Image (cartoon, rainbow, N blue to C red; front, side, top):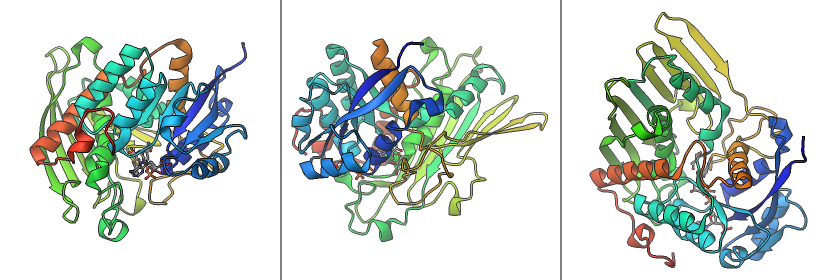
Length: 400
Ligand SMILES: NC(=O)C1=CN([C@@H]2O[C@H](COP(=O)(O)OP(=O)(O)OC[C@H]3O[C@@H](n4cnc5c(N)ncnc54)[C@H](OP(=O)(O)O)[C@@H]3O)[C@@H](O)[C@H]2O)C=CC1
Ligand SMILES: O=C1OC[C@@H](O)[C@H](O)[C@H]1O
């Protein structure tokens, strides 16, 4: 076996998920049986100050020679960076990713990929023009549990999927926790609201079971019917979105399939962190697959065959998780002792792609990210949710 190849990461932004991702990135890959690659952090940038980037590098246990930058513009010029992880709010992804791609950097960009589909299309075009890797960081797609569920579907275990019911909701008590309206979950200037932040996971399960499992040539965008309830205090950020989707499919493939995707930042999928409510039910004529607990970091499946037989599996996230810590943006913990967060799997995929010259993610390519953004555009259109022009624009550069 040849020595593992090292991929050199630069971290753009130093907020909550940047910390979690970077700690996970630095977990030894052999703890999850990955032997052909390694990750290292060579730089981090903060738009606030260089000292914030320095503190971030210390807190994450990054190598002592990693460079701290006080501006994203300076950081992208660093020749030692192979790939940039973007961890700013959704509102900033388009401008930040364009900056990286223009500078010739490969990019792994946090979800939601962009504010709208047109921005996603422009990024995809730029990545192709520059022959660079670009992937939306939907970590859940790379979990072994997701791979297992997709395999159960493609193997025909439950028959052609007829219906998917998927929810990602958290009772965040916004009037208490986000009273000033500045929190990115409710702030229109940061593309706030449940849909882009939490709802995209409800849609992730719908898409990875009903769309991604179809042969590429047969994948067709769904028809969408949606309702939005806006969060009163800030307006133009949804507190619930409810989406009904019809996926056109040939008769041979089982005919059209339906899905319901729901999201909320007022009520929870699992009230009181009760883990017995499935976040997703995937239903076919031969049975049903249930996924627990939260759709972004699922750790349990139940398959109920039509004869009543139940098969349950647990999917712990390998560690050592010490320090890599569960992050939900609000300080609560669902992580079992010694577990990692699970963000390393998407990082492994990005690194593997870069080492092997692939330009897109294996389990979520740019075409699918764009279709999902189109669905969210349609939901916002039907629900009348418009963000400020400066974050909807594709004009680059735009000062945010
Ligand atoms: N995959 C997952 O599990 C999760 C993904 N996310 C995604 O990650 C992204 C960031 O979320 P999160 O880390 O919770 O957000 P935070 O608010 O904690 O961090 C965002 C960081 O972005 C930078 N930033 C640049 N401009 C702005 C601005 N105008 N306002 C606020 N921050 C700015 C700041 O870093 P600096 O000052 O250093 O430049 C800030 O610390 C979102 O897109 C979110 O959807 C979030 C949580 C979990
Ligand atoms: O991606 C995410 O997953 C976990 C949530 O708590 C967080 O708000 C979201 O951004």
